[in-house]
Amino acid sequence: MKKRLLNIGIPLTLLVAATFIIGSSCGDPGLMTYRWYSDTDNDGYGAWEETPQEAVNQPTGKVKDHTDCDDTNADVHPGATEIPDNLIDEDCNGKIAITFYTDKDGDGFGGSNSPTVIEIDSYDSAAPDNYSWYAGDCDDNNNAINPLADEIKDNGIDDNCDGDTDIVEYYIDADGDGYGSQQFAAAQGVTNNLDCDDSDAEIHPFTKELLDDNIDNNCDGAIDIIN
Image 1 (cartoon, rainbow, N blue to C red):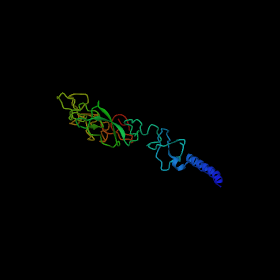
Image 2: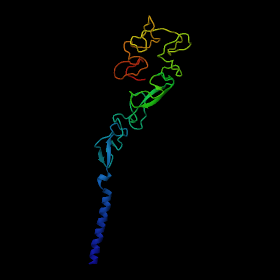
Image 3: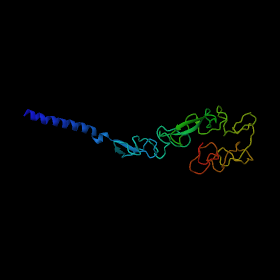
């Protein structure tokens, strides 16, 4: 009787052991699967999906990462190089990179030789403290000297940064934005002639270029292109 039980017990034990080993190698599929997200642009980063594909092995066109903020552009993903002034958030940190200019004297104009790339929340954001969206200041240590200042005769200073010293000529500023047209004023006007549209106070140098309006808002000769 004991021998018979032994003969039955050994195969049963082996069967249980084999079942355990085989079962362990297969396991519960739910414990061994991963969530895979579509990587449409093949940059190694996928876009978030509420119902990603679940599989043990990596499906074609899928990755585990789901932090890509634009899965249609392979140059946009976390860790990508941020390119200034194109209004694209390449590295997916929720900010864009813009070239600003140091404005030490606080007159609203930065020095042309001090470009600094800074990340901000959006194109509508104000310039960071002590910086300006605009260059053009020929003396950033004196807030009375900038492109919008009046040229003062016989002081030996290029007050309005137009490259001419002590030459005072008055121009009509029909729209009152502080920037004159090419037309000389019979009476006193402004001492610059930088405005490219003197009928619209929103159009003049040293202002933000508005996008997608097909207008050269900042008079730099380029339409809908910043900096």
